[in-house]
Length: 617
Image (cartoon, one colour):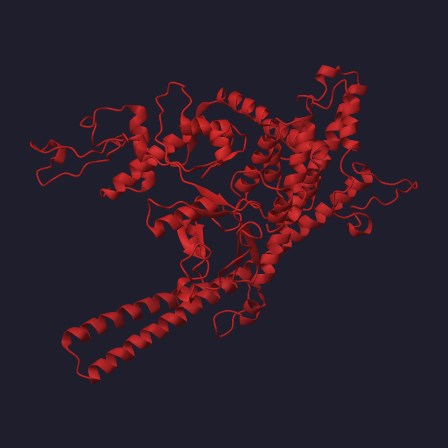
């Protein structure tokens, strides 16, 4: 393991970092608020037990064993079987009711002398309903048999209604949320223990006479073994814990409170790796100074916020990091199940978005022409065709690597391309540059005045101003990229940078509204969902009297838009741009509430409104 930067000749700087941490950080709980096994109670000799001591570590072991024992006894299979049986019998009851209604309808039709055709249709419906009811009864009987085999109680209903009634969905959601926070907090204690372990092991190695250059060898491997991870992952975890514990007290505090996970904490560390200690501390306080606000950020949203803050503090270092990253580009291949593989490419942003936009355009064009393949299949086929061998369009038809797919044959066994006198349709993957639209949001100061305000590439996140200018105006790098640019004015609130209005001269109002929502929300508005916007929905349902307006609109992914139609879900629009960032409150069937806040657009934001937006998270 490579020695951290704070282990060197300048030990005074290292101690200053630890001693100079902000004492105003709202730490979690101390003293008697902690469980007895975690308190730093006096040891047998009267001295105070400290973190890393045998007493405290033994306390953690006792608590861990108790938690493991409780977790092992939480789940009772018979409870799940009771719920399954209750559902199966409910389906059976509904099926029997439909079958009875169908039989009654047939009897009424016979008594009224309906036509033979109508009676045959009703009789067929009744027979189908009866068959479905019989199948539902069989499934319900099997579900009841499962309860019996597990030793559970069964009433005449086919299950135990008392057990089913005791299961509380709201309580389960509360437990799931608390367990998530507890899991994160335990990971935080694990990180703190790793930092202490690294320091203790380095001290032992130095006392044993190991040279300074070799200090740290074998330490990460011990952590990896204890955590059942690879040595490489062990080094990553040790480095992460060192940075969090020593340099990022606010992130560590949010981590310890269970508000962010180990993965999300690692994203903040990654996005600030190039900053000085002082700048990293500022980003740390800005992102995690309010742990509750940080907890409401989605994964990509948290990463984007840290990246944007880091760029604004040190744009030059950010660009140098970008230039260095270009040299790290690579392509890799990993095995996937069922004879498939994952082809991964790490490439510059501009080329990546152009490739994806091209493949998306190819797929959309093919689907519009009647291609029955899925959109993802068409994009994969086009990519394979381009990379393996981009033959002329009449060559290689019918193979899996052909972007046109397998062509249908006529009655004589020929494809339409083989029939004399026919011409091939334009299925080639070539797409003109003007047909590929990328939505890039940046301030006029940044585009024309050379300001360093970060830009936003919709669907990706914040990017540095110079990169955005190069994508817009061209950078003369010889790759033939000369984009045609349409400018559209966006009007934002002077305090919160929330989108207020925009030019929409070239589109009808519904399309202009979609564009407004897409630029305002930038991602699915369901909390923690970072998926791209695919559908546009009414916050208050249209059927319930909701209006088709910007204020009542939101961008959602397909899955979330379908989920909100389920029974018991509701959405409410929160703060407006005049008071802060637009937000949406989601109320789930169990009554729990979650808030999603739209990110502000690029541009300088007063500290007051930043804090105001943060309080809405």
